[in-house]
Length: 298
Image (tube, rainbow, N blue to C red; front, side, top):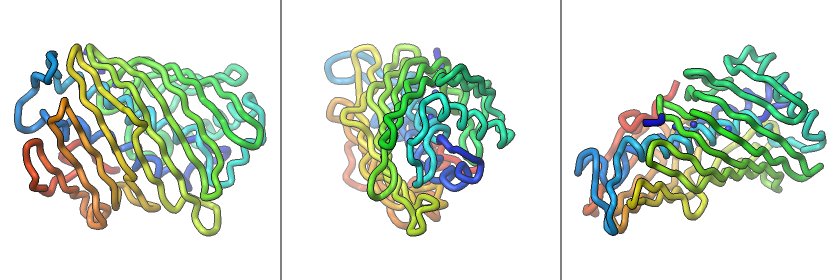
């Protein structure tokens, strides 16, 4: 089976300022496989209403596209003072210079406004806690003073040895509070298809030099389909404060044809790495250590 899976910074200091926050947001979907409604209680496969069999391996591979694609936002998105005041070719050149000057393990080449990033068998972008792998070809366009769009082709791209192939679009725009990043994607791995994306709201610190928090939600709908079976994933206001690897609030809900499960983060999660998981067919939440779901911090 296929295995699955984007910050832009104009200098290495800017890369350092926002790296840990978005990296935390990237970790989020790594929880999905273990939290799926058919994960712990029914084994590796489940029959969904309406026919079809969900293989946990395929579902995991597809959802990892979400992880690494969000991770790539760390390559393209700058700090709160991002002005989008350069054309696409100049912006691509800045990204290339930033990665090379930081001695990043990412192999990067550029032709005008097109960047090719090769993460090999596993390479963590600067200051990121997660190694990603594979190749992304990114074409940049800039709406002067307003936003930047990155059109991406991803090949054998992913994290945690789960990769997929497909396409995505990242759009970053200024807000009064900071920056909004929207990522849409469609990725395939084996018989699994992930269709959807994420919205990330980055709130600037009081001095406007870094990001104080990141709030992460999925695009509606975000689905994974395997043959005739499918499930939806809804992340709502999953929020990380500066320097945190784990969120301090928010929820992720999973629904496989009416079979539901939920993962909830609270103020203690940020320091303990323990979230509250409500299994299928249960109203009682139980503490779950996030590293056990694959959410591990460096």
